[in-house]
Length: 181
Image (cartoon, rainbow, N blue to C red; front, side, top):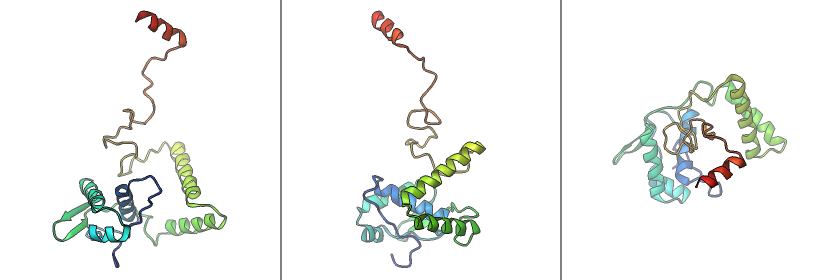
């Protein structure tokens, strides 16, 4: 995979399926501008050699990305990027990226681990979204809990909360229902 733009790293202890890690790492490279339209992804054989995952795992990730419109599989030629996810400010040379890199180095210097840093960033994003009423409207990916890819969370509601339209029952209501049966 030498010379390729993206080198996949599989964390077997994360609990995240390897094919999802490949998709997420590719999306991250697209967002950061490391991958551009027309770039070739490593072949399945190259990914297998570097990560020791099953070839079908790599192919599943590539098919998922193809369905999402991010890549195109060209038989005999490889898999090529067809859409960018890069946004202004995410490039390596952007001032925002430089500030974030410096901040991350300071966080590591005071002993914060990756999970701590991610928790801080997520908390800051959550606070910002709460304060501004933002909801990732410009995000191109579906929610992690949106298994069907239809915009609805696992429980069938749009926001992932319980359906509050169901009647609330008190213990006395339950006794009444038992008597009715």
